[in-house]
Length: 193
Image (cartoon, rainbow, N blue to C red; front, side, top):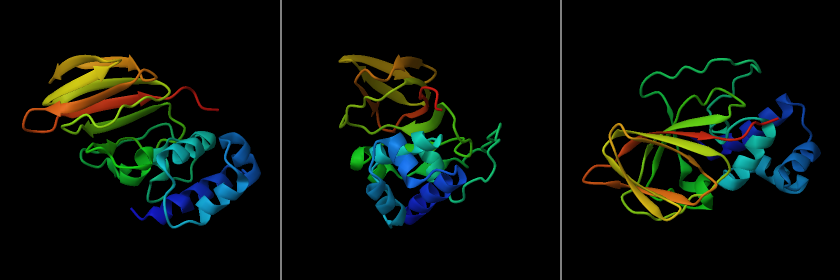
């Protein structure tokens, strides 16, 4: 997707919610000037910033990556056909740097304000990043073999294995074998206002 579309989506959703830049600044802890610059930019903000803005607007970051924002405030169902999930280009958005070789397919992106963020994840072959974020995570191995490192302890996961954990604890993982593992990952963020 075009990066400038993310900035347009932020502005569109902010106006739909009838938020001024001052109100969004108060909710995000970012300055009004910085938010204005983001809305006029042709480049996407870093993931940490995008996440703060999305939380303040009551949506998950993947929703802001959409081609066209849904105009309805009452979306009770988000249905995604096989292979119709949105590939999230996290090269710029994840931790202000690279994706660390992970591929993410965002599912149910049309549902605003959700607390769970489902993805199909293909982890890299090497551990290059330690993740630590608010909430909880559930992972189910769909294909292949995955090594999860959680609080320094390693767990080998194979097809059909699952894990549920507190994601505020440092964690990482990697694919094992000749082919990347494929996981269903559901990230839970605490209730948004």
